[in-house]
Image (cartoon, rainbow, N blue to C red; front, side, top):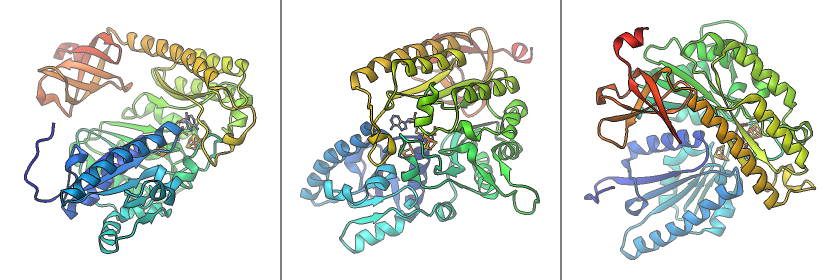
Length: 459
Ligand code: SAH
Ligand code: SF4
Ligand code: F3S
C-alpha cells in the first residue's frame, strides 16, 4: 500500500499491458522521466501523469484500455475540481494502431505516443504544457529511439533487453507488423554496452527481447571484421561479460532458427535450456492460411534438431484455435503436434479478428462456441504436459537464481533454468545470486525445494 506523502516532485503512474517488450519500454519511459523530477507511484490516484502502455494483439487487450480510460476520466475530473491536474498518455501498440481515434473517443487523453516515439516523451510533455492541444506522435524511428535513451538503472537481478524490434512476417492474424513496424536490429556495441552496465549493477540474468528475436542480425562489433552476426554469436559474446550468469531470448520464429543459434544453445552454458518457439497451429492448411511460412513437419524437425543439440531443453509455444477455415480435423492436427512435442509451458488463445489484418475478412470464420470448446481441450492437454514436466523435476538438484522474497518469513522465490518459479527457505543474503536447490515438491504454479548442503552441490 502506498502512503500519502507531502508532494514535492511530480509523480508518474504507468500501467503496462501486453508483452515483455512493453515492460521494457515502460521501464525506459520512467527512466526518461526521472531527470524531469518524476517519481514512480504505485497508484494512479496521486499521479500527475498517467501512462497506459497498451497492447493491440487481441480485441480484449485493446478494450481494457478504454475501460481504464473511463476510470481515469473520473479521477481527472475530480482532480480538476480540487484544483490539481493529471495528464493522461496512451502509449504502445493501441496508440500506434488507433492514433487520433483515441482522443476522439476519449477526450480526456492528452497524448498518444507510438512505440517508436516514446524517447521524445520529455519534449512532447513540454509541448503539451505549452500548447494546450492534444499531441499525437506515431512515427517510426527505432534507431534514433535507442540512441536517445539514457543509461538504464537496473531493478533486481534479472532484466529485459530489447535487441530487435518489429516484424516483416505478416502472419495474417497479427497486428504487430503494423504497430511495431519493420524488423530492425540494434548494434552489437549498443547491446553489449547495455548488458555490461546491467551486469555492473548486479543483473545476473538478461532476457533478450524481439518480436522476432532470432531474426536479429548485425555487423560485427566496431573494430572487428567479418560477416554479419546472428543471435547465436551475439549470445556467445554476451556470455563473456563478467557477472552475467544467464542469458535467455524471446520470441523466436521457426523460420529464423539458424544452425548458429542451435549450436549456441547446445554448448553455451550461460544460454538457458528454455526455448519459446510458437507454432500456432498443427495443420499445414491453416499454417499456410496464417502465412507462417513453414509446415508442421518443418517445425517438428526443428525441435528434434534443437533437442539433439540440448537434450534437456524445455519447449514453450503459442497456439491459436479457431483461425478462419479451421475444421475439427485441422484442430486435431494441432493436438497431434502438442502430443508429439510435449511442452513445458505454453500460451493458447482463441482467434481474435483484428481490424486491418487479412484474417479478419477471410471466409469461414469459426463460431465462438466452437473456439471455446477447442481452447478448453487444448488447454487441458497443455496443462497436463506442464504438470508432467514440473513433476519430473522432483528429486533433481537445480541451480536457482533468487529474485525476490516470498510471501512467508524466510522464504525466497527464484527461477530454475527452465523458467519455473521455485520457492525455498533461504537467507535474504542469497537474493540476487544463484544457489543449488533440491526439488522436493510441486504446487500448481511453482516448485518447492531445499538448499543443498555443500557436499550435495559438489556431487
Ligand atoms: N512475435 C511473437 C509474438 C506475437 S504476439 C511471435 O511471432 O511469436 C503473441 C501471440 O499472440 C502470438 O504468438 C499468437 O499466438 C497470439 N496472437 C497474435 N495475434 C492474435 C490474434 N489475432 N488472435 C489470437 N491470438 C493472437
Ligand atoms: Fe505477429 Fe507473426 Fe510477426 Fe509474430 S511473426 S509478430 S505472430 S506477424
Ligand atoms: Fe501487444 Fe504490441 Fe506486444 S500488440 S503483444 S504490446 S508488440
